[in-house]
Length: 177
Length: 114
Image (cartoon, rainbow over all chains, first blue to last red; front, side, top):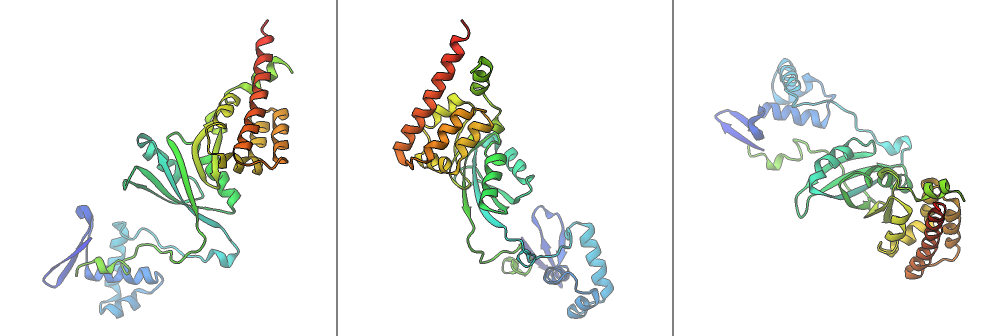
């Protein structure tokens, strides 16, 4: 992802040229990723633009699906949920990797699914469960039986140091203004 | 024991009901068994840690009773837990127990045809 300057207009080119954003759009996205409940007026005041401009740009980015949704980040421990998490590496028959990944993605306890080509073709997934026994049941009954699964390695998460989504803010060092 | 009972215990079960060998929580060895015959073969090749993991969790006993519906072998497997065996001693004893049961079932099955 790069941002190209052309005169006063700073444009960010996304891969495949799907959507072109300027510096103001990016600043608006930064503001929303920090606090999506911040008012158009407050964002506009900080950026030195009218609140109607903020509104128009947000609407446009919503229509273009640059902004996919607005969600709440919940501290699940505060509401008494003490789930365990695990990182699972699934070694598969290369012919079945895509299909296994899709099946994994459809399981309720599976939070993230990636395929990797680093050494051999494998799937990496983040799984959550209510207990180690529950985790084992999910893997033994729903994942191991999938056609194409060759073996599975699972590491239980013992301590979390950071968990966040990619944001315009924390990826800013890679944006060349 | 009737021929029906022996045949039911010796049947091959669908993939989703097979026994999947793990060495610990979430660590699947890639080895599975879909019948008593296959189970008997696989306990001789799987990592012995897997046998220890499943025996003392009661997984063998549960699968044999619920999926193969062999309460006699399930009971024998449960009794193995009390011996506190590990390593190859466990493998040998489990293999002996399952093989003996398999032979009994297959010989019954064969003799009932005459």
